[in-house]
Length: 162
Length: 222
Image (cartoon, rainbow over the protein chains, first blue to last red):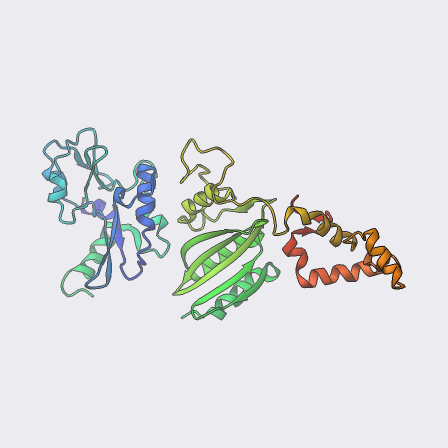
C-alpha cells in the first residue's frame, strides 16, 4: 500500500528557482475559471517582505487530509488511486471549515459560487497534468512522485535540512 | 555562468544567415534580430541549450510592420529575439509547444494586434469581450507608413522613375530668361542614372522609411 502511495504524483516547489512571475496563478485561474485573476487561483505565490523570500502555497494532497476530516457533509474526497484531494462543489455548503482546518489554508472561498474551492491537480480536464507546473518555465513547480516529495520536503522544512 | 557573447555566438551557430545583428546595450542584456521563419529554430535551440525562463512577448506596431520581441532569461541574462513581420503576411509560428507559458501571451497579442500565430492550440479570444466586432483589434494601427496621403504619389513616382516635380510655365520662363533650358536635368531623362539614384535611396534608408516595395515598384500602402 505504501508503495502505491509513494508512486502518486504531487507538486513540489523550489523557491530558489522561482522568480515570482505568477504565471502559475494566471494559468490556474485561466484553466479553471476562464479568467486571469489572481484571486481565483488554487495556487498562491507570496513574497515575504521580512525574509525577502518567495513561497508558494500549493496543495500537498495530504495522505490524511484534515480538510476532508473537517468537512461536515463529506464534500471533500481523497481519491484512493491517485491520492488527489478534491472538493465536490455540488455537496459543499460553504461552511469554510476546510479553510480553517488546513494548516496551509489551501482551500479558499469562492464568493461567486458560494463554495470552497481547491487544487484538483487539473483532473480530469488536463488528465492530471497541472497547468501551473507546465507554465512555470524556470521549473520552480515540479510534478514528482510522493516518495521524492517526502524526501524533498523533509530536507527543506524539517530541522537539520538545508 | 553564461555570458552575453556566448548566447550570441550560440545563436549565430544555430541560425547562420537567419540571424541578423545583435547588440548588448548593457550588462546582462542582449538583443538579437532574427528572421521570423527561423523563430522556432531559435527558440528550440535556446530551450534545449540553455533551459531559459520564458519572460514574455512584446508586440510593437510600426504601422507597416509588427515587431515581436521574445524575452528569455538565461541565468539572469535577458535575451530578446526580435522578429519583424510585415502586416501583409501578419502570421508567425507559435512557440506554445516549446514554452507553454506563451499560450495566453500569444492569444492576447492576437486579440490586441491581430497577429495570427500558426498552429496555436487554442485560437480563441482572451481579453476582448465576446461581442467585440470581429477583425477589430484595439492596439493595431492603420496599415500605413510615415508619408502623408498628399505626398504618397510623388514619393512612389520618385522612387520608381526618379522624377518628382512638374515645372510650372512661370518657372520655365524664368529659366529661359537666364539662359537655362526650360526643364532642369532630371534623373528620368537619362536611364543610366536611375540605378545610381535608387542605390542612394537604399543607402539612405528612405525606401524603408517610406515603405516602398521594390518588387511591385509601389508603396506598400495607398
